[in-house]
Image (tube, rainbow, N blue to C red; front, side):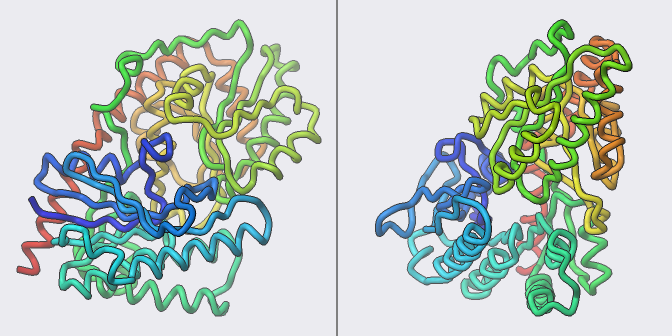
Amino acid sequence: MKTVWIVNHYAHHRARDGRATRHEYLAEALVANGWRTIVIAAGTDHPTGRSHLNGRKLTEQWNGEGYGFLWLRGVDYRGAGMGRAVRRIADILLFTILLLLPGTVRRLPRPDVIIGGSFHPLAAWGASVLARRLGVPFVFEPRDLWPESAVGLAGLTERHPAIRVLRVLERTIVARAAHIVSPLDGVGRYYADRGYTGDFTWVPNGVAVDQLAEDQAEPDVTVSDNEGFTITYIGSMGPANALESVIDAFEVATSRAAERCLGPLSLRMVGDGSDVTALRERASRLQSAASITWDGRVSQAQARMIGRQAGCLVVNMHDLPLYRHGVSMNKQYEYMLLARPLLVGAPVALEPVVASRSGVHVGADDVDALAEGMLALAAMPAAERDAMGARGRAHVLRHHDYRNLAAVLADALDSTLSAVR
């Protein structure tokens, strides 16, 4: 079998983190396409910041059938404020340093191709250095666009020294890429506008159909309105998730619900992240505070159970120019899998939701529009909401099965190898 290394700082593993995500699912499914995968990730969990490697241990390895994980020691960055930010930067730097130490990867099977993902650009840059060192093709997988994300989320300008450094890193990484793959469908155009002339393959996020629990095979999706209508958010709670607007919109919606003769509304927040404390404090000052519950971090199985009980599932985004290059959140596919209708606040349409008619779209970060979306779904007959959710689930099972997506990625890897031979 051919071997690919996937360098992704924040890749999750079900046994270690209680949930699997894109890279473990792809690694499992690539086996059937003739590729053995080694995922190189950090020993810290994101978004919690908890370190899994302690003492003097710098690495830990796990081997499965046809794929494996290598975790590199990280810096525990739990907490909040400036201290968390500093520790998270230290975690990024330590990961990159360990990645490039020759002894770190010496025992791994030699790769035919190396993929580097850019949740942060140093991981992708480090992967490109490894590829040059080993004389194998480098495939770039941008999950976030840098420095566009820093410009959009942190408000930095092009003159800022950090942005200038990130621009240099971006040009270096792209120049070294033999192929670009991404879950963002507009990334190919984005880099072509910046001089990239190589191949681009869109590999969206998806779901692992073959690993659904038995109770997920044909879920009972009927949700009664007798106890009111529950809006549920499941996922990370950080700056990029724009949850302040969701909480504020819920306050507006609850104040209007009685006027429209609707039953009681509730908001259920499931997950963890750097903004949890601030979000809970914000919610505590609202009149609707008693109708907001916080579950904290739960396992993937628990999250799915909670999601299936929701009246609707909500996701919101900031209104940033960088999103015009594409949006592919893991949670949108997980949400659709749960067969519940979606309420989406986004600057661009989420194509799977639109194609399946499985949700309500409103503008990004628009409190009034989000509130009206909540009320519209609450007023909708339960059977109509169930039908919306069923359409979404059918669409994601048909078009976003990781077994099919892995075949697309394998074709990209095969063509990359053929081009350099």
